[in-house]
Image (cartoon, rainbow, N blue to C red; front, side):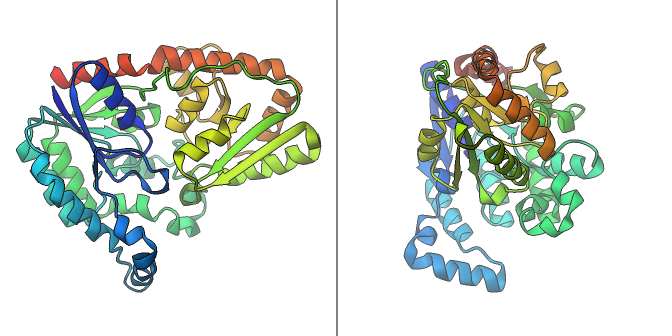
Length: 378
C-alpha cells in the first residue's frame, strides 16, 4: 500500500511511518518539522527562509503591523513544488484538518488536490480542530485546554491559533474535509469525547510508540529525586505550567538539596529528550483526560508523569492502578502528590514500572499500525 502522511506535531506520524515501513508498506511523510521541535520529514514545507536571520526581522515587523505572517507564503510555495509527487496514494492521512498551515484559501485548494489525486483521505483528531473547539465552547464544564481561557479571556493572544478554528474561513476547510474524507480517527480520549456521536467517526486508535527506541530502565534513586519541567511558551497556560512552577517553588523550599529541578524552554526535541532522560518525575500537562505523545514517551521509559490521567482515561483502558499522576490546576494538590513520591521513592519505581508496561501493552507501534491498516482497508 502507498501511504502519504501529511503533517507532524508530536512524532505520531514519524512513529506510524516507521511501523508501516516495517510491515512492508511505502510511506511518505510531508510536513514542516513543527518549528523548534524539528521532527524529520521526507518532503519539507518548513519556512526556512522566513525563519532565517536575514528575513525573520522583516517577517516580525510585517506581522506586527499587518497581522500577516509571510512564512505562510513560503509554506505554500514549498508545498506547491512538492505537489506533483503527492499523487496516486492509496491512503492520505492528515494529522489535523488543517495540516499545511498556510493561508486558509490556499490550504483549501491544496487539500482539494490531495482529495482529487489520491484514493482515500482520512483525518486525525489529535489536537485542536473545528469540531472539538466547538464542543468545548458548548460544554464549558468539560475538561479541556480551553478552561484557562474561559476563566480569563485576557489570554486570547496565547489562544489565538485555537480560536481561529472557529472562524468562517476555517469552517469551510472543516466542512470540505468532513464531506470528502472516508472517516475521522481520534488518538485519545480527549478527542474521542467530542466525536463519539459523529457519523464520520471511526473510533479511537491510541498514539503509536516504538518500544525499541524508548527502552524501560528501572529508576535508580540513590540520592536526589530529579524533577523535569519542559516549557513551551506558546502553550504555557494551556498546559497549566503556572501551577507546576508554583508547586516546584514550594517543593524546593520544603526539600532543599534532596531534590533537583530541571526546567527548559523551547528547545529542540532531541535536546529535550536528553535532559528529561535524567529525571525520575516529569511534569507534562493538565486540563484534559488522556496523555499526549510527550507523556507516553516518558512513561515508556519508566518515568512518573504528571499529566492527564482522569477516570475517563482509566475506564477506557480498564486500569485499576495508577500508571501516571492525574495533574490538576491545584498547587496544594500537586505539592501533596510530589511530596508523597519524594518521601516514598519505592512508589516512583512502582508507578514507573506500571507506566512502561501500559505503554507497551496499549501503544506498541506495530499493533497500532495494524489497526490503522484495518480501518483504512475496511
